[in-house]
Length: 391
Image 1 (spheres, helix red, strand yellow):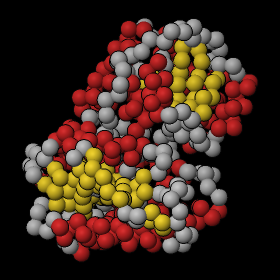
Image 2 (cartoon, rainbow, N blue to C red):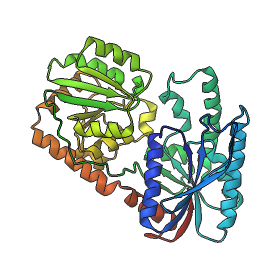
Image 3 (cartoon, rainbow, N blue to C red):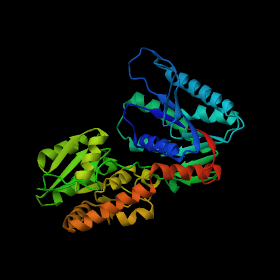
Image 4 (cartoon, rainbow, N blue to C red):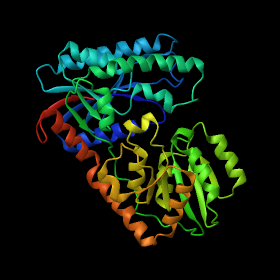
């Protein structure tokens, strides 16, 4: 499995980390993880190749150089060599090279596997061409041009895998135009620590919480327009995360004491606060192009907390999730305000029942071992077949 490793893990990287643990729990796959680390300034201009073992699997970090213009080419060369070496070592065995297809540095891994006639699997968590829409206003001109070049590379290559694993059917249709074999795995969620619900010591107000990317495109504008329509004082809105709408959130918090902007916190702290909240909210609009293709991993994380969840009706959310969620009828401020007040007035026992049901659904059906076993069966044609993997 090819993955990249920045200091702050993305949602997809948490998913891949859980998936690797799932393969270890299955006990029927030998996994080698090839990870493209990013230099963080320490260690000078060069970082040598490193390896380690975790969960019984080997992790390989190719050497890197921190020289503008050469770093990317050096990384590509290292990934190609490592993948080719792995393919040669496992020649004659049932093996697969699985790549995060969103990464442009997956290209050399796929090419090396093709050279050795090893089947390749593209794991599609998003579409490269949509990232600019989602990351609106995030980068300066230089970084936007560089990111655009890498995006175009990944976009051209994403259609060339032998098999696909995608978060949604919409993603598969775009990334897999040749209709090669595919499997839908919308999330991989590890069990979260703590009880099904955590009682807050301070019960003066009803806490509505959002945690994630605080972008306008992710519903922040809609939320800030809805809050003033709720006249009750026994409610507060806690918002966590970074994005292009932070200044507007801070301004709203100055005008309305019920709004609390908590900034960026460690994931462990966010998970604890999600368990303590009364309602978790996801207002990602369903009308944007990226909504058709995405499954919001944040919804699965919310459900795993055991706290009730209010969300928009995104096409990427499978029907099986429906009984455990509250859905907005329309994505308008008045509808958001009304939905929040209706949930507030729902008997506490009913709210907790639905929240606990959501947690059990995620723990029993979307855990790492179960999802890893589905992938093994998809690729080998066996329930839990013996296979050698490069992930």
